[in-house]
Length: 442
Image 1 (cartoon, rainbow, N blue to C red):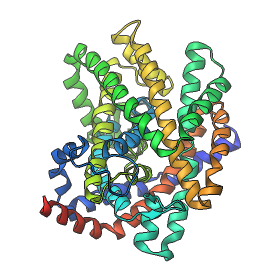
Image 2 (cartoon, rainbow, N blue to C red; image 1 turned 120 degrees about the vertical axis):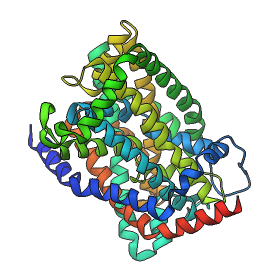
Image 3 (cartoon, one colour; image 1 turned 180 degrees about the horizontal axis):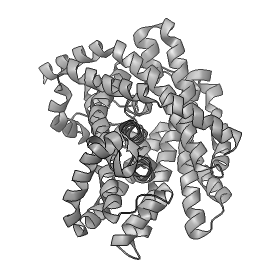
Image 4 (cartoon, rainbow, N blue to C red; image 1 turned 90 degrees about the vertical axis):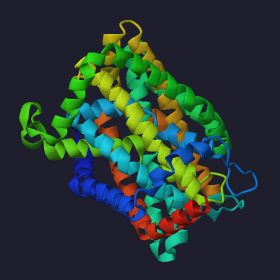
């Protein structure tokens, strides 16, 4: 390990220690308590909103509720669901999946709060378009003295949303399986992302609204086929997940050699990387929704972790655990081998195809997030030019090592979590008041 890799390894260990994991869980529990789990009552109503029943064109915002959700899901349904779950199992054992589920449940409540705030406190840019996201609701909701928190979020978002992990994993896959040099993958990703992001959030929403539903259904249905074939093993796998999370194996190391802390931290960290609840990136997407009812978009945002963690990540976990291939390969290769073991000859190509779509869709959304952070920091004109810096960085990401990539991204995500959740806690009563007003009106 060189000094650069060692530096980021130390930094991520400090950033993603047990205190941050406890902070995230405690925040989710607190939001659940003060809301009395009322957002979950609106679960069915969220699907009604998503259907377009409550869409109104003559309101602030740039995207429909459905498009805003697909933009957010485009950023979350991606590498974390395939490679990230495999990494979680490799590092934390089966028990890490249980803590991914727990993080996903509280993540739904956290997203309800952050995304409601993102629409409640919006700020007009130089063109008069209302913008939403943590940096805006921190500044507009808490005042100028909290602006350093907004700046911290924007800086971490600008760096953390460079699609390093996505480009790197895709380059690794294409090199190993199809002998494509990583630099060519990086250049191809540069051209693809540049073509779409130059059209702004409207084009991003148009593209993701078509890609996300297709790739979600393709992957879930393929996973169901594998799970159905291995159905006899599923009850044992579920028991193993439980015992590895809570039993002697997790508490004292046991057969896996993992301490409870390792299992817990690995599961929570990979869940956050997967569904981004509390990170604040999702709030930037949902802050573009056309609505005068912030709670309405909060309910739609709550569906994100449900689709992402409880459906897609669970599918990946059950496929991997039913194959018995837990380690020794990179995240994507481990998942591909697991599919191929049950579906010889075609399983790996299903994964590679869906994986490529996941990677490309995530790159699209992340480019928007990073550019939005740059515009907040430097203004729309100067910040808009960051797009060219962003695109130039992408080919370099394709040739870096996976461990370094993961550590840099994890560190930036941790730095985004603190300002997002601190501000959301301080403004949480505003969300509760809006929630009661909205449900009373219904």
